[in-house]
Length: 61
Image (cartoon, rainbow, N blue to C red; front, side):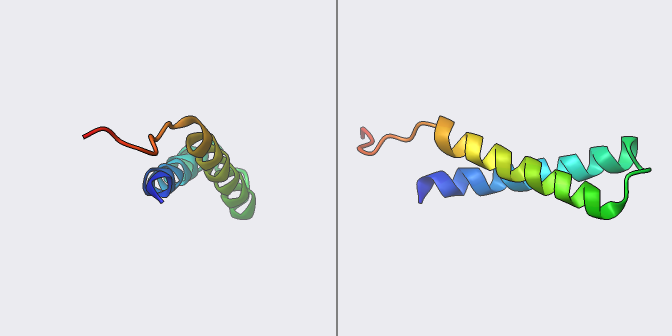
């Protein structure tokens, strides 16, 4: 569960930034496509952060 407390905020931040960038630079793309691109970026960044962040199972005190 510790991984999800880091992964979910990263996904949300990526989706928000992706929507902002797509709206600013590529406004000619319709909104449904922009949402799909942003959601794909969020899921991809979540997968990357889930597998690449190291969390010790037995943390030292």
